[in-house]
Amino acid sequence: MQPVLNVEDVKLVEDALVREGVSLAELMRRAGMSAAQEVMNLPDVTGVLVLCGFGNNGGDGWVAAEALHKAGLVVTVVSPVAPADIRSNLANVVARSAQDAGVPIVVGPPRSTLEDLLLSTDVVLDAMLGTGFTGEPRTPFDIWIDAVNSSDARVVAVDVPSGLSAQTGHATGACIIADVTVTMLALKPGILCDEGRDVCGSIVVAPLAEQTARLCVEADPVAWRTELPDYLDAFTPPVNATDKFTRGSVLVVGGSRRYTGAAIMAAKAAARAGAGYVTLAVPDPVVPVAQSHLLEIPVVGMPADEEGRFSNRAAEPLTELAQRNGVVLCGPGMQVSGGTVAVVTALLEVRVPLVYDADALNCLARLTSNRLDSFPEVIRRPDPLILTPHRRELGRLAGLVETPPDSLTSSLDAARRIVWANGGSEFVIMAKGTATACVDVESALMPKPGPSALATAGSGDVLGGIVAGLLARSHGDCGSLALLCALASEIHGYAGTLAAQRFGSSGVMATDVIDEIGRAADAIEERASFPEELLDALTEGDE
Image (cartoon, rainbow, N blue to C red; front, side):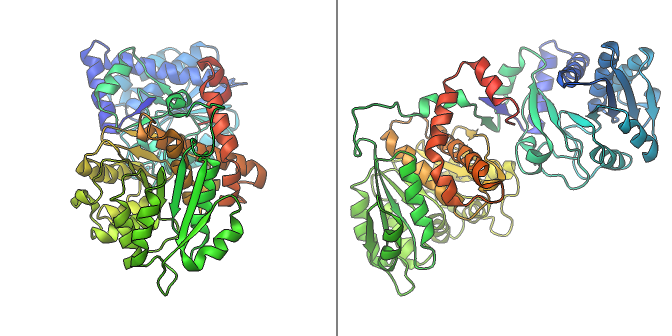
């Protein structure tokens, strides 16, 4: 796993490295050399244009420029001021060194001159604005960013593409679109989510010192980015001496007259994820529709109200049915009413692992007046409980109805408030978004996110089914519950990729993703077992 550090914690790691004898000057030299190496790793590079800012990020660029110049490449540095006028002491020193080495420098050029330079360059090294940047780029950087993005040159960004917040993943103004981002010391949240996913390209982490790995752990990472070999312990070993009952059973509770498809898709996904026996419980009026779509999955009708939703009278028979299953997934298409709140509340008392998705989460929000973190006793239980909210649902659970989380870090903060209030070791929140984080009381795991093709109605219901199916197959022996959730998200994401290959990136429907779950799971398990050097070759460019 790779640590993900908040920007302020990266600074703490830098300070710790200095205390251990690695000077800031040496860190800048190593950062610049790492950036230069990534430029040289690109094919067919002869000309490089280095855009430097005022601070230490610019200093990294000056170091890289001198290294590339000495390697025989045609290098030009564009700077807003002359080396002698750079105020940052470290950046001033390395800029003067590059100047003394004969690196050509263009100071404060008009856009037309910059565009002429871009026409004759193969690669742009973006060292304008670093991880401390917030807000909108000011002149001249906004002009430079636009010129670079309008050119055909490949772009390598130093630490973070200029204009992107390394903390939030948002760009409120002009932002470099990079082909490669060389980020120093550790991953930052903003390069893994939201606009960061579109502008960072391939991400390379440059640790800069042998002490970095230890110091990043000591800095208490905000999250951990999972890698394929991490999932080996979460897979259920295949055996031939099995039957449909030993592969685990799932009860899906959901559906309503208005939303019939969500529960059907969740049940299918649980089966595709490997559960041996899946049962779907829906309100009585929905039974004929569900049965027409499900041949292998039995459908059980439950008492309904006049609107075709579960009534209060459904709570008791549903709890009895839940006790005969290994895992219960509740919520898809269920709607929010007095009856569905009663069902959600009753199922919490059943000694069986629960996955609450969609309207089950909205029922919890209603039950706790949108402050689940203030009423942790409602969901405190000895058996596993997994909540799968997207950002708006998480906002309803955490008292943020009007201002739901809008970034990975704010989602992590909201999820942790609920998880820490609960305090249970068998409780996980899958905070879904452009990057998903599986949060338990000890850590947050971040699987590789899926493609934009998953941004379609029903996709979340499919993910809920995958989680339930994997949990059923594990029979409660999955080791880390958060890791199992991360694996489910990874399978969901890769199934989306396979579906997009068949139907196009904008043509995928949730049912297409269901059909690819089995192939996705097999592929991930196979790739997780490869030696690291083969895995690197297979996953090159995956970021």
